[in-house]
Image (cartoon, rainbow, N blue to C red; front, side, top):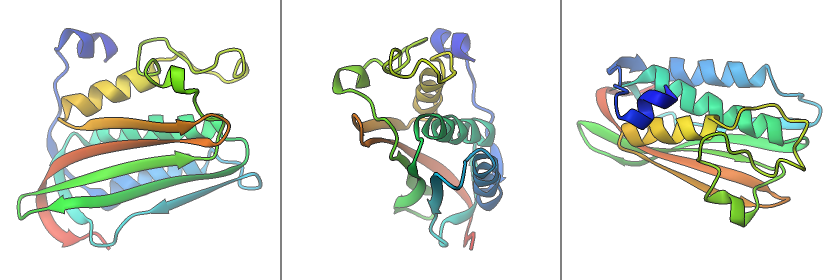
Length: 178
């Protein structure tokens, strides 16, 4: 997908999806990767979030899993939080933010601009034992931008990181997912 993103040839696969299923799948995958004795995983998703949206569910899942996998890799103790918030909702669409926050190693200020580049990893000397190609954030950024959204990183070295994904999706069924 990275070469398709760069060439502008990646197309979204738009379809209706159940939000509760998407979030439950992601939470299940990430929960299985966390060592509960050292790291807590919390999630905050509003019960009134619309139950069915239209968008690229596969790429949305990849965005969440990529960002949460990074949080798991770089957090040795403390907590990881997945927070979904509705920023605005009309009859036809919902604008929401997905925020992944961790108490991991953080990212140095001077590296925060570079981390979205291809094959770039934060603080390679300090994190030599952490696996990864340095493509995950570049792919996430490409997906988010293709969906018309924004991706923001806020980090303090030694304290943790927060990634916020702002997206708008069409509402198919506005009934709360519960």
